Each structure stands twice: as C-alpha cells, then as structure tokens.
Image (cartoon, rainbow, N blue to C red; front, side, top):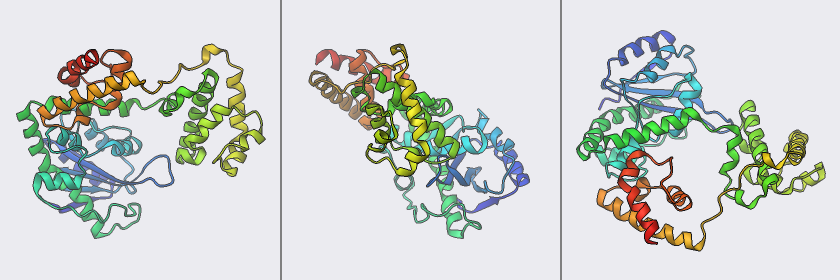
Length: 368
C-alpha cells in the first residue's frame, strides 16, 4: 500500500492524470465535502486511487471536468467506493456524472460475509489487519492550504481500497456472488440517476395514512414547494419547514396567518417569509376536485399481518444464516411488509434476491 499522493490543482494536471487512469483495471474513489448549512454538498477534495498510486484533486481550483467526467462514464473501468450514497451526490453536483459501473465495498463486504454496514475503518481492519486513524473526519475541507495530516488521511481512503478490492472481488467470485454485488450497485446508480421527483417527497412521511384526501394533497404540495425552495436557496429542507410542521399544515389546513402561527415549532421568520405562499397552497388544494387527491398512505400492519412478518423474519434469518450473510442485507423489512400487502414479490426487489429468498417469503406468507 502506497499512501503517498499527487496533488492536482490545475485543469492541465487533471487532464493528464485522466489519460493515465484510462489504462487502469479499476479506480478507487472517495470525496471529502462540507454539508452543514447547504442543501447541496460542497466538494472539498476528490480522491482517486489507481495503478497503485493516489491522487488528490482540488475541486476549488479545477474548472474543467470534461476528462474526469469521461472517466466516470467509462463503462470498462469499475469504480470502487465505500458507503457511497453521499459521494454520488458530490459527483453529480460537481461534474454532472455518476461513477459507473459502481462497486460499493460496504455492500460487497456484507455479501462476502465480512459484516453488515462495516465502516471503512472496520473494513480495513478486517481485510488488511491495518488500523486507520479517523482524526480528520470533521476537518474543514474547504480551507486552503489543506494540512499534511488532512492530505494523508484523504489519501488513505483510496490507498487501502486498492488493496481491498481484489481480495473482495476474489471472495465474491469464489462464492458465486459477484453478480449480486454488481446488481445491487447498478440499482444504486439507477436510483441516484433518477432522483426523487419533488411531488413524491411527501411519501416519506410515515403518518401519511392518518390524512384524508385533501390533507394528503396539501402535504404533497407543501413538501414539493419546500423541496424547490430548499434547492433554489441551497439550504437544508429543515430551514424552510421541518417535517412535523409540513404534516401539521396538511392536517390543520390553516386559512389565515393566525391559524398558521399556532402550528407548533413553526419559526416566526419562516412564517413571515413563507406564510403567504403556504396559505395559497392550502387554499388551492382545498379548491381541487377529489380526483386530484393522492391515494391513501399505507397503514401500519394489522395484528394478523404482524404474525406474517414474524414468520417471514424467521425464514429470512434461516436463509441468511445458511449463506453466512446478514439477514438485513438479504431482505429489508419494508420488502417483507410489501410482500404481505401485495401478496407477491415487489418489483423493487433485485433479481438475485427473488431467486434466493423469494420462495421463502411466499412460503412464510402461506404458512402463517
């Protein structure tokens, strides 16, 4: 493992490095970013590991990402990342591309039986018997110049990953699970690429089932409006309205500033800035025909359905134990609940899971 690094802070340097990386069998990627008071992550550093070396890209100095975008889009070079969900946002925001084909080492480690949800530190310890210091995790990655300690820490994230990937890939090939890894990570990229439409964010509220048709429409429109405001202003969603406030607006359907002001935890500043917009949303939603109302939310499982869920969990745990992988990785609780509600396997379930555990789920449902 070579944790020495090359620091790239000009378009020319990055272009030359990208040409070199095109000959790599795979590249390891990571990002350091800040996301405290903004909607979008602000990239502070991009790390690349390839050909046994490490590079640190300064996204504050770089302005031309065309060659790097080409690397991310190169279908012949796997991109290896660890626990990559937020990293994907950074790449998408910074250069308008996602790293594909993607292989997430956290997912791969779970499928290999190394442990569920392993941190990078634990993955390195398990696979390489090395200890990684995490002292720079909360550093200010936007400061310049970066300290030697920050750069060393960042380089290690892709240095060790270059050593782990061949071991992990070999293990999954031996187990016949490499296609599982590839499918799960392909699904991650598809989800990140599609994103969530603004009018679908209301579905994240687990109390949606408590609302009637008009209330659901208000919640849908308030959440969509909040999403657009947060993106336009580049502030966290909670800076506009927190989730419980959105729900209470939908439930109460206020028709005046006074009624709106009585909603708990609604800051006065938000009331003054956004009150008129919210009242307009509520009024227009109440004037809509019932055909515009979103469908009811999913109610919690009944007592009988909960018994089905318990039977399914037992079946999934037995299957997971036989494979030596975590039950939560084999089948998520929400997938089991969807099987119970639909009485069939959900479309969202990956093909390998349907093949491995699908019959177990359906038999558990029939048996219960």
